Image (cartoon, rainbow, N blue to C red; front, side, top):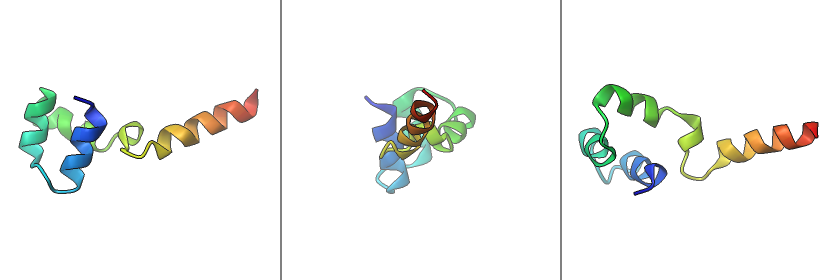
Length: 58
């Protein structure tokens, strides 16, 4: 399953942090880092921003 979708489900309150970690197969420490990772934002806005910055340099 896509990590972004699982994390989005956690952020929307559909599943708990423990359930999210179990689905992804990580411990709670790793889960905290994944939830705070801007590259795993469900709408991809962080990824789009990063690409637009690098593409403007070319």
